[in-house]
Length: 173
Image (cartoon, rainbow, N blue to C red; front, side):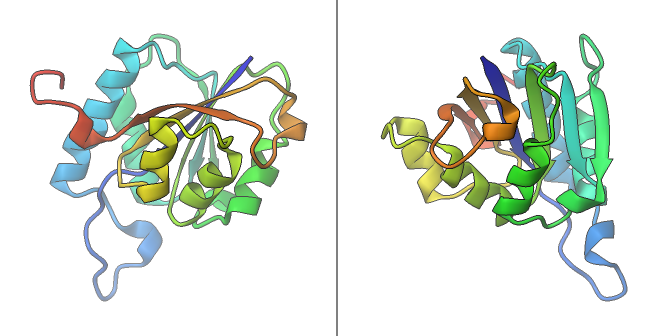
């Protein structure tokens, strides 16, 4: 069984003149949220073998906040993930080696949200309902997938977790 994790980058600073979109850093709240999600991942043993991260600054800063790892995963920054569409994200995932059990994708909306909606089976669980309502910044999704990475497609994964920074109480952070 494969594990697929999606993490939308944490809250970034607002766009500003003279600052390219891909250079936007995390906002203070984004740094706090990413640290909290990192702690929640460790507490729940959500430890990827491979991290595919967009080359944008806000995604790389989100990744940095997840550290330290119990076992350091292979990290691949990908320009192709910057503002990738759902189909582009699927194409990237289909290239993952079968020896990789768990993959974390750190990316952007709307592509990440659309890809998650496509992958999730129609089981109608509470996580699917939350996903249909949106994918807030800093939110982590977990999917279980029983096929080969190259066969990943529409409705083929089971959404087993939807964890947003708001779900984490101050005590749990």
